[in-house]
Length: 195
Image 1 (tube, one colour):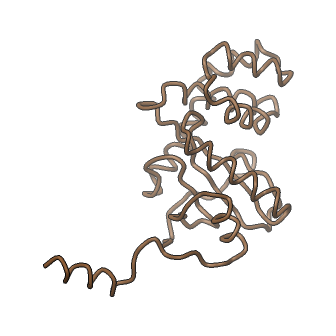
Image 2: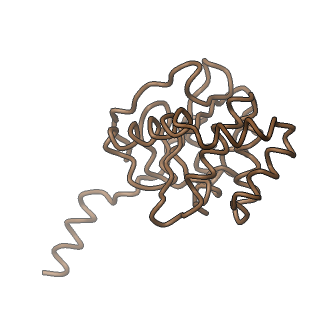
Image 3: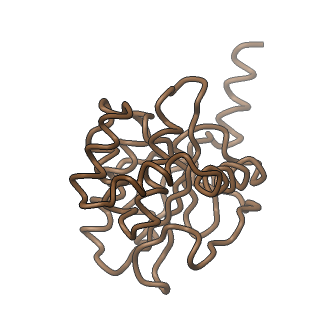
């Protein structure tokens, strides 16, 4: 069951967004070290490929540093790459190579992308990059909906269903998905049987 949320709107030049403005929007709060965020990333890529210009995708950082010790460093690498116009390329590398997120790995990815690695290193350690990541994280907390990763919003509404490609694809086409919450009659029947 979806509900309206208090998600902060996308800001041009700040949020990382790809796809046409008029298309349905999938916004993900994700963590580069989270295996479930990686699964969602792969599903979203499939939906983008299948629907072409029919979907728009935005990514916001939500590093869960208590359980993913490399998540913040990976987010810093993505934002440092963004400052050189290569956010999406780094985003892709981080998810494809999720098990290799040590500092040397991140520097190697910067080199592979043709970044100015000295600038990349400076930017990764900068307050501006950390502030950008904290902005995303705070917006997730303030929504009241983001408690873990991945958390998806479709057209501003939190998506409580699965994040497999088929579910997302159906949702993008406007086909309603079965509710994750049983109808009241089923809950009532279950309650009466256990009483």
